[in-house]
Image (cartoon, rainbow over all chains, first blue to last red; front, side, top):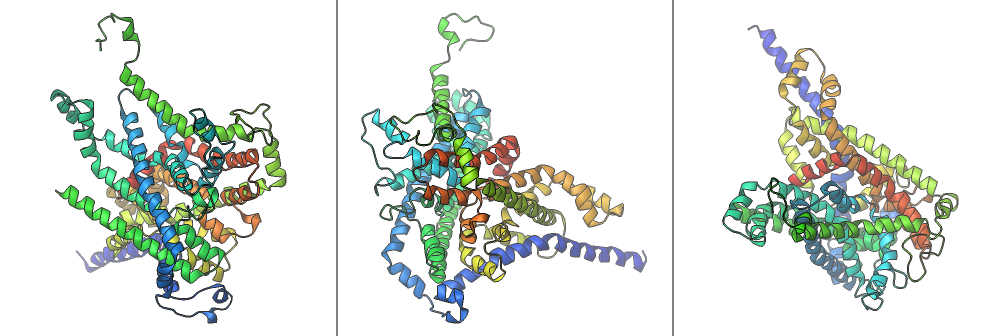
Length: 305
Length: 286
């Protein structure tokens, strides 16, 4: 081999590396400028008293350290919003997952007919626009002319002011969220169910296991890894409750549906307390991150055994 | 159960078994629960003004009318909002496809320093909710003069980590020999990308296009923050604001909801296969 031939491929490789950077650079620049830098900046802004005066003239900006966080943790409204969000997550996620799992089991049943139709019908709410379907539900949940109260009246239940009564507003939003979202996890769980080898069921049947026993000792253990992934993603998503209360209740009545993200929106883009809003956003992030981390660790320990 | 060869001996053999009846009955109930609000929306959108606010609440319009749709387009500016939504969703989809497909392919098939580490870092960033970035992003766009413009709405959708991930996973299956052969033939990397890679990636490109299209169409919080000029409103933002003004006008709001949801439902029904595939690939990442 001559020297020239040895140099040429390495030069070509170097050139190819440059081309590779040209391929990734546009996307990476967009992600860096419009996502990574803002996330870092969010923390910086949360340490300032950035408000409407600073918005007009940045020289009004002062660094206040962790004062925003301290004040936030002393505000009853923040705890109210956090409590509401936890209520939504704690009740909404199990209900959503139960609905998803139930629907997936039914669709996966050998007895089910018209599976493509049912799958599409059950999935349809997922692709709809939250704002539009929240508007529909606001009327369905109406006190006087709502169809839900009308249906309940036929079994003798007096009209309920679903969205106007602090006791019922959050349950109504949870019902709506389950309706809107259960189809998503249903599809993922259905794929999981279909990947369980048939031999396991055959063996269980030969051993005389009932349908319930097969569900309990074959299906659920085989599905557990996917179920835990789905649970982690759903919890992280449900912490970001915003559009539903914005359209259906505007955070009311008596702030019973005010979520953490709604609080961030109001602080930041209604009252222009951007320092405060960033602190709210960061606390929400830490919360989601912490919960996700705990769950991932728990899942890893469980499935490593 | 009788064997297929055996003649059924009882009339009851012709009836579905109780278990089959239960499974299909429950599926029917579930489908009714899922579809009822959407069907009622459609029915109510054709009702005369005030008709839905009567007791007992009607399920179907007595005299179907297009009055609500006409009202939306002539007085509520719905044509403008519809055009905004179509324009923004199409632009965001086209631009983000270019960025994400190029980057996803490079992460799968082109070698460069720090590739694996960068990719792992990006996947790690997926746990950060987008809302954390909203306040600084708003200030940044204000500096750039992009607040209250179309550009401001689509900027955060231009590249997505999830999109890059989706393309990369799919591109991993492209055989290296194929690319190497094209290189030996003297094709440039750019030419290979256009002539060899993009056609091979077309299924995942459709999947990503559907995801981005539905995502930008349905997005609410960011356009709500970045837009204050009514003329630039997208359908969800316009609908939310209309629904606060017209609390009593059920039928009008249902027509607005139909106009907002029907386009995405049609896109989904037409390209369902691609959408479901993306959904499945997305779940594997966890």
